[in-house]
Length: 543
Image 1 (cartoon, one colour):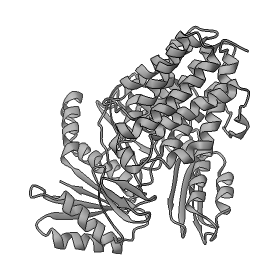
Image 2 (cartoon, rainbow, N blue to C red):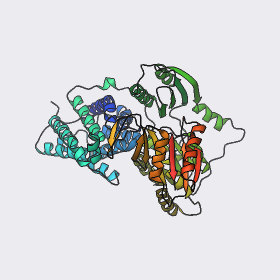
Image 3 (spheres, rainbow, N blue to C red):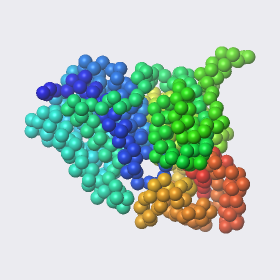
Image 4 (cartoon, helix red, strand yellow):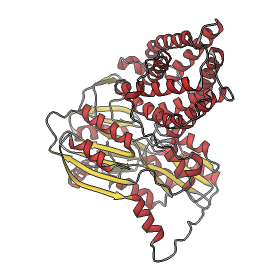
């Protein structure tokens, strides 16, 4: 029995953990409390692990520290959503502790686990107990107790998993929202799955054959950040119609996950009548092949982005001028053609495709920061599940970067309205941070799962109204939910209601909603704008 972890064994453990996490991501997603489609915990953690595996597979496995460095780098680059960022920080601290070691025993590895916990807690501004952080902390404590008793690495991992499960069962008592929904913390369970994968490799039961990951050598994080290299060359868009009766929502979820494996900027929206797909990939044919299983394809559009880039920069009638450097630049995350156009009108310098259901990775945001034409950069995440990834990207940059913690695109728009190029970077930071607190955001969507939250039992398919992240109302009717949501939002101090209608909503129907709002709030200015945002048919901004 091997008493010390080698680089080769640690590599097998990571591959096994990624494979097991991939197999379990759907069950982890099902633990999400909020009944809205989003960048689910299981998916985000799995994508983060897959990014790590890309680096680990090409790492020098003769030394444990080299594998640890690859694990950390890959996870940091590919971190998506809050759960992915926290996971990447756990690996970052672990890797730092293993620096210089060719092998590691229980004492070294348990110490590394604890350093990972410390790094993860530092990465979160207001850590909450009852989350993945608590589970990670108690697992690390168990590892140190086990190592202190002289247990070998195999026994230690058993103790770690046992403690993880015990702590996980207690998470509903630490977070009331988990108790109300009757679930345990998804991130904490995901971490236990990873350590179960570690154990499988230690026991010789690796399941890495089930893991389909692109083995192409990843580009260097720092060196590509400011370059014009295009990782996925074909912008692929199409609709799936006449969908087979046997197709379920679970099939569509698996379809979305497959697209994430072969590209980025994935968007799958619609229902079992019509589904729109958007993906940047190097294998558009595979995307079409995936979709053909569900129905007929319509309005197929495939653009070669590398060719477009070459034509733009090599075949222009006039020599391309270098991009003018500015005192300050802005990067924003946005989804929806209308929202993108609004930000462009505000002269935003770089727009990262993403939002709900498609949380961009740390690396994607980092590239946009480096590409922005200034050494002083503001970043608007416009989604609470993207803020940590944006902050992590800011740390990687040598530029002066401030993340404006916007939870929604209306907050991002209001923040941009407060930008004043005549003021300095710090003054603008304070202005924009203050401005985003002055707008209330209401979002309307359909519940994708039955859930109990805030004392309400919400049925799958109901129309729900969300005010600044909290579900305040639900009904079976779009007009009624919009009416109730605005009743919760509007106060005597407000003067403007802006309505953004989303992808798939006709202008006529949007106008009917706007007319209803105008009739009920005739003393306020009511503006209707096309947002084209996915997931939310209507988003209200009240100021």
